[in-house]
Amino acid sequence: MPATVQAQWFGNSATLPAGLNAETGVTWNRDDTQTGSTPVPIPTATGTNYSYLKVLQLAVTGTSTTTITNRTVRISSAFAAGLGMHWKTDTQANWATSYNQQAASKATADQTASNSGATAPTGYTAITTSAVQYDNTSQATSATGIGTTLLMGVELAVDSTYAGGPGSASLGNVVLGYDEA
Amino acid sequence: MTTNGIMLAEPTGPVIEVRDCKHCFDNWMWVAVYDNDELLPECPADSHGRHMAFADIDRSRLVSLLLAPRVEGLPQIAVQVPPGAEPVLFRRRYVELQFSAGGAVGPNTIHCLGWEKNGVGAYTFAFEDGSILTTSDRNAV
Image 1: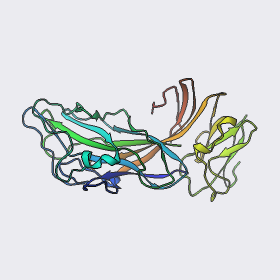
Image 2: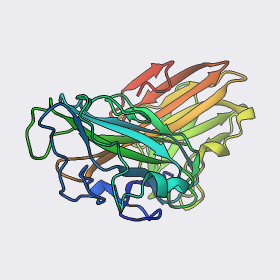
Image 3: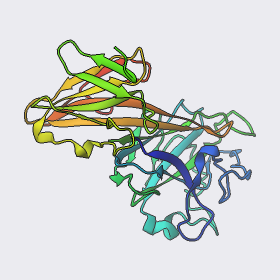
C-alpha cells in the first residue's frame, strides 16, 4: 500500500515552518513567498542574477508501512541559454542560517563578473535533465511530515545572454523523484 | 480465470490472485516467493488487513519476486534472486512541478525488481504502459 507523498514548499518564516503544498505551483522570484511576482531582473550587461531560494522537500501526507529513500531532482527539458537552476541541501536544524529569508535572500549573490546562469555556484549543483540524488535519508512512512530529511534549496539564475526577454520564462517542469519500498 | 479481481497463472510459477483493494492504486502488486513455495503478497487477501512492505520479506527464504498486474493487459513479471544476493524491490515515483500553469503532474510510477551481489546488480524496471527495461544500472530511469 503506497504512502501518499506531496511536494512541499517551506518559507516565509524565521524558524522552520510547516510545509505548504508545492504542487499548486512555485514561482522562482525575488521574495520569500511561494508564488509572489517580484521578478528576477535580466542583467543588461555581463553578469548573473539569482532568485531567492525556494526550499522544497517531499512530505508524507498519508501514512503506510513503506520506506522512502533516493530523492532525486531533474528538469523535464533543457534550459534556454542564459538560464539555470541550482540546488543545495541543508539540515532542518540549519534553517535559520541557510533558509531564513525574512530579511534577505540566502541564495547566491548577484555578480557582474561573468554570464554564469548555467554554471552552478560553489556549494550548489546544477539541475539538468538527468536525475541526481539530493537526499538519501531513509524515512519510514508510518508518520506524516518530512522526518529528518534534508531540505533542498533551489535558486534560478539568469545571465545577460538570456534572449527570452522580460516576463515569465518558459521552463520545463521540476521533477522530484523518490523510491518507495 | 477471473475471480473477484484478476486471476493469473504463470506457466511454471505460482497462481497469483489480485483482489480489488481500495488502498492499492499501483498497476502491479508485488509477491515474494519463498523456498517452500509459500507466497507473501503485498496486498493481503483481506484488503482491510495490513499491507506488506519490503522490510517484511524474509530474505533468507526468498527465491523470487513477482509483479502481478492489477490492470488487464499488463504482463506478470518474475525475477529470480540468486542465492546470497540482496533482493531489490521498490517503486520509483516522480512528481512534476509545473512552472507555467502551476499544479503538478503525477505521481508517475516505475516498478523495479532485481538483485545485487558483490557490487553487481540486475534490475528489471516495469513502466506503466507495460514496457520493461532490464539493466545493470539501478539509476537507469
